[in-house]
Amino acid sequence: LLSLPQKWALLALSACSSLCCLCCLLGLLVAVGLTLGNQGRVLLAPCSIANIALAPVSRECPFDPTRVYVSPPWVGD
Image (cartoon, rainbow, N blue to C red; front, side):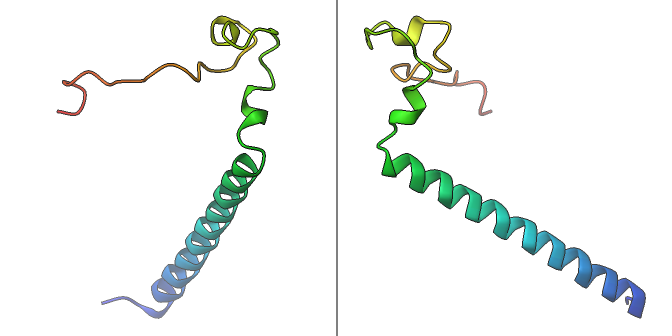
């Protein structure tokens, strides 16, 4: 089925893929841990308006934490 060089190439690519997956998983765990550790306050730190109720409409705020994102029903079809 597969020659010896193809088997080694497949093994090497598989090992590289596994290593990349492990690095991504560790990065995700660190990001979730840091976010839970500071209770998400860092996410709203760029919002420079003193009134937090006005922060989502500010251009300085990177996202609107109060918005509910809903996909239209035809997107999933």
